Image (cartoon, rainbow, N blue to C red; front, side):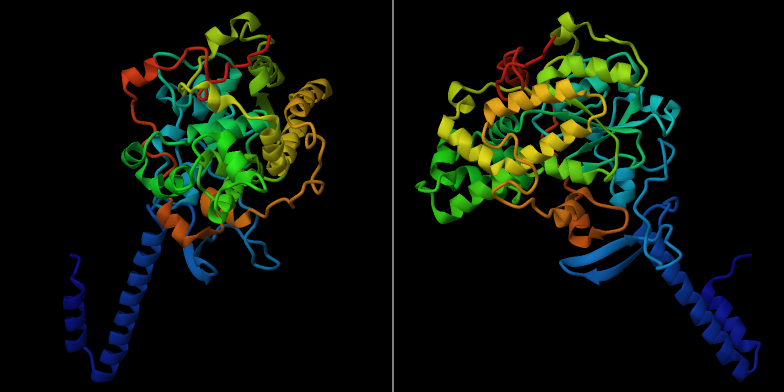
Length: 456
């Protein structure tokens, strides 16, 4: 019969000599201390089936959490983080990074596709890198993910690509296996993407901002409402980014740092190309779908990984991939003067460099396809389109702290980020929209009012 610890100690003391009693009590105290230590470790690690034990040490900016997985024999330092767990029978990569946190529902695939993941071998699986405001919602819904999707509008497509794109990396939710066969980016001309991001994150009113996005209230209020004229991009550029603009010094700093992704006023400007590109493994194989050539690139990738040549008929592109996450904007939202476009392109110079890195790394794009996108880039940002890293007016930002705090890694996560990251990106944004809000959007427009540039 199992004995209570106090009863065990009392009997131990009565039946032994005084000297032996002391030794026994010391041993019993050590045993209790060991039990407390084990309980503490299990509590830190999360569920009992967690793969990695966890320890902590003090670091700059807060407590650093370390996962004590395999180490090098020479210097006892952790190896480069690799997601050696796989498929649905283990916790997702995201849940291994953010211990005791569940993967947000919007980052998962539809139920019928979750079961397929178990049939996809590690050497075939694809990580879907959803860079915000590049057309990623429409592609994601077609792949079988749920973010911004209306299930009765877009059904997952047939073919290998929707089956093998098993997990997603979007903003501060990295749920991909580091050893994935490919990392699939959806990309868009940087100037068009930043205009879309600016418009999309702009609240209608302070009341709607507080009701719908309380977690982002202060940062978006600071940018869009506390700085006069920042509600319209042309006015924001002329007052906040132009050298002799009329905005206050504080608002000018906000305008610049928001545009470059240095400060988190707008989620979609903050989580930019550089963040997503540096957030994947350094030598990861990349494939890309260009928003401007969506159907062509989808078909090429499907064939590239062993599927049909034209699984989406080019003349039925708009019928096959539905427009998702759309909202109605007026004409002034879409317009930038030539002077303002030049100012924005200058600030986006490093983003242009990272956009070109993705283009050139994409294994499904040939030289002519890359050059076609370069030509389109030269039309929108002629002065900076051909700048390479080091040529830009500003050095490439060091975003390591940003990556640690928001993307997270198995070996190092800042403790304050671990605590605050439980409130996930756009946590109230994915609630079901009212029918009237859906009806006001034009079916031929994407989320910022641009006609989708599907090419044949």
